[in-house]
Length: 111
Length: 114
Image 1 (tube, rainbow over the protein chains, first blue to last red):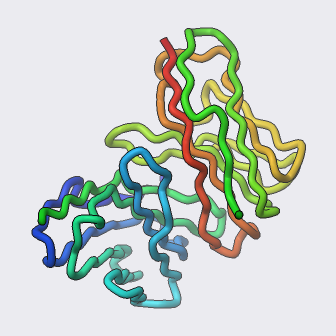
Image 2: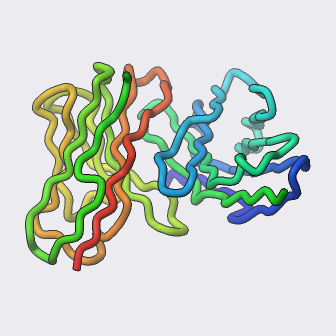
C-alpha cells in the first residue's frame, strides 16, 4: 500500500547550523508534498508544500526539494534557531486526496 | 477567523461509554478528515468526507463512526470505546477535492479510555 518513510526520527543541531529531513514515498501517482511543523501540545501547521511540477521551493530559511524519479523529497532548514525545535512531518498525496504522513522527525536546536 | 474547532480538548472516560468528538469548520471546505496521532506512528487517517453525506474509510476506521449531515460539521463517534483508542485526535479540512490544497488542522482532542 501507500507508504511514506521519514528519516531521521530525531535530529539535534547547533543553533545556526542547517538541518535536513528526508522522506521517500511509494506511490508514483503522488503529486503533492506538504511539510507540517508540530510544536509540543499544538496542532500540525503547514510550513511549506511542493507540487510535482516543481523541483524546488524556498521560503526564507526553509526549502523543499523533490526528486520524482527517485521518489524522495527533503526539507532543508538553514540558520536554525531554537524556535525551530519541533516535530516535523512530511506527507504525500495523489489524485485520491488521501494524505499519507511520515512518522515524524523531532528536531532539537541547541543554543 | 478561519479555523477548525474541536470539542472537547481533553476527555477521560471508561471502556464502553459512547462518546462523540465534534469538529466544525468555518471555511466552507468540502473535504474534512479525522486523524489519530500515536507516538512513533505519525498521523493516521480514520475517516474522511469529500462533501455532505459522502464519507469513506481511511487507514484505521475500526471502532469509529462519522457523519456529515452539514458541510461545516464532521463528528467522530466512538460507540463502544476501548483502551486502544486512547490517542490524540485531529480533525482537518481543506478546500476543493482534487486540487491538492493544504489541510488545516484543529487543536486536537486528547482521549484517554480507562
